[in-house]
Structures are given as structure tokens and as C-alpha cells.
Amino acid sequence: MSENRLKKIIILSLAGIVLVIGAYNLWAYQGTLLSPFLKDTVTGEPHMPIARIVAEKGLTPGQGTEIRIEVVKSEHLLVLYSGDDVLKKYQVSLGKNPLADKEKAGDGKTPTGEFKITEKVSYSPPKRFYGSRLMMLNYPNRKYALQGLHQGLITSKDFLAIENAENKGVTPPQDTEMGGGIAIHGGWGPFMGSSWTGGSIGLYSKDAEELFEYVNEGTKVIIKR
Image (cartoon, rainbow, N blue to C red; front, side):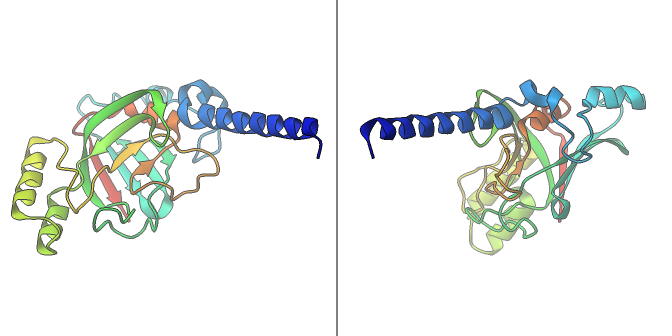
């Protein structure tokens, strides 16, 4: 193979890599930029902002009604509620073996039960696996801490720290054998599959950015099998 041909192959290969990375960044990282051109991940219809849905239904989210999230793991579905009204549904990605319940650090499983959002974080520039928005959940909560205490995964001191965090509505210790870092976040992109997270709930960044505006610290998140 001649030197010039080898150079052309290398240049074309590098250009292809740059193109793929650029396309991925636009899709997974900069959700707001592409959202007008993307279809709803559940219905396949053109994207309809929550604000328009709220206006058409005549709802006033957050004013006398409870905003909450329900995640149905078996359907890879996140549902945003205002009281008893469904505002919007989103397709999500979960951890490996998504129907199994989380047991300990590093198992890559998504927990089940009732949680609350304890932190809302915006990233600029977006992070590779979180996208531009992250909503931290209070895992491990008291329920999981009790299991961990009985199994010898955590100490009584750890349990009390987790219980204290739950009482205060803040993020519990994340460095015990129960694991941590469970959140709702963006960063999901094409070809990543439906079970790519480490146990968190992954959304396309455009969806995470939209959801982010309608939840608060303290918003209830129910994760069902």
C-alpha cells in the first residue's frame, strides 16, 4: 500500500470518528437543540412539550396538586403525574437485569420502592453518561438500609446516617456497601441499548431537560417492577 493511500485512509477514518462523535453529542448531550426535530419516545408522534400538554388539559401543576414520578421497570417507562393526571410518558434505560431489585454496590441493578429527589444538577458542558441534567434519588433509603444492616453490609452507624439523611430529606451516604449514585439523568443515545446505566434511570437529554423543569427536591419517585 502506497504512503499516500495510507494517509487518505487514516484521514477518512479520523473524519468518520469525528462525525460519529459529533452526531452522538448532538443527540445525547444537547437535547434542547434537537428536540423540535425529534419524535416522542413513547407515542412516535411529534414532540409535544409538557407546557402545551398542561395548557390543553387546563392543569396547574404544583398548585394544590402533587407532582410525582412513577417508573415501571418492566415497560422501561417513566410517567410524570400531576395529581391523578398523566402529564407525559418517557421511555427510559435502566441497569443490567432491570427487573431484579438492587442489593449492593456494583450490582448494576435498579432499585424498587418509594424514593425522593434530593438534588437537581445541571451540567454545562454536559457529561458523557449524564447528559445535561441529573436528579439524584435518596438511595439507599431506610428500607434498603434495614436490609443491608440485617445482611451485614453496613454498620449500625451507617444505618443511622442513612436514616438521618432520610429524615432531613437530603442525599444519604453514597460510599457504603449498599452503593449509591442512583439518579434520573440524561445522556441516553442511539445504539446504547435499554439497559446501559449502572442502576440509574437514563433518559434522552431532551427528555431529562424537560422533566427537570417540572420536579423539585422532595418530589416523590415510585419505582415499580
